[in-house]
Length: 394
Ligand SMILES: Nc1ncnc2c1ncn2[C@@H]1O[C@H](COP(=O)(O)OP(=O)(O)OP(=O)(O)O)[C@@H](O)[C@H]1O
Ligand SMILES: [Mg+2]
Image 1: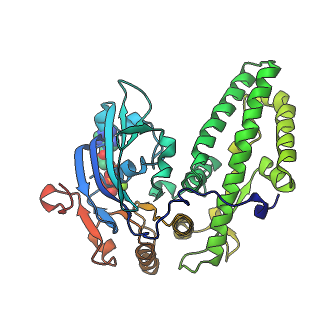
Image 2 (image 1 turned 45 degrees about the horizontal axis):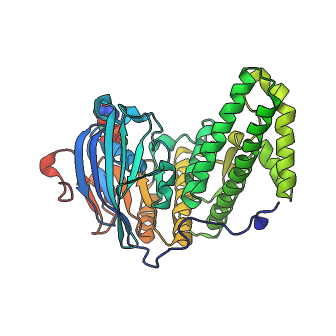
Image 3 (image 1 turned 120 degrees about the vertical axis):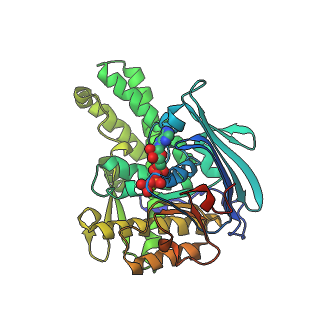
């Protein structure tokens, strides 16, 4: 199947878009019992916001709290209980979101005394955290991603899935259901089970959700590659491809029903072999994302530290711009220490890109000097001491 055969991309929020793309931002943030904050409150305008202050003051923690306004476990991908103030077992994050001139109160909280899962409320009503992308898109770039091209495939896959579900909300739910089915199949394998009916049922689910995951990832990959190819930014062009056994089979088959049959048969045939290792050896949970520096025809893993950071920025900018193009909404950007490793020319280009995007960007840095290139509308919040705090904090 060629990508053009995949049909129209059914992107989030396409139907109720507004032309007023500037009116999409977080207007206030309130933290209670979150990380090093017993309580913290701040209000924001729609322009870039830079948090500055010494090491350990709590800059990344604020960005992490905003990242919990998406499915998953935030920019650090750690256990929720680690995020509660001194591991007290409960926290609350509340934002006010302005979207198309409408206002939404969104809360994300944990109370270990009641449940290990976090609860999400929009205007007082509980929703699944997996549906948060229907309200806002958060795109992050943190120092934890600096080694993304060198480390194992899991983080690259997770990175791409976080991007995919801001475009296609159902992707987060499909990933959850797919992973549940894989876990169930792995349990059967470990038990050395010969319950054929049970195996067949689980594999049917794996094929159903797995196929949708492959399709949706490819749609988003295509959007991003096309955007990067056509765009003109002062960052190296990244080119992305998926490397995976099932993805190869997918690209060789023009008919979805035939593909599903082959996927199903392959799982069946691999049962015997998979039993030895107790894991499912084929499926979209095995895919790797290969990123290359296009102009140099060089794998990202072989590029310099600064080049790798620039490639990531090039991808993140493509995500933000494509999201804006398709949804007419601006994504929220979380850019943690993004200026480190960048030369002055690149720093200025990134500043310009952020301002042109008209996205609300939350950034961090040690010093004010990193943000002098931003225009007067941007806001600098110094977290170092309360007497020196911005008027935006209260
Ligand atoms: N659950 C928690 N309860 C209390 N404090 C915590 C908790 N988790 C982390 N901290 C503390 O929060 C502090 C701030 O961390 P954060 O990563 O936000 O700092 P930062 O300002 O980004 O620093 P840097 O400039 O080094 O990146 C750290 O000192 C850390 O020990
Ligand atoms: Mg930090």
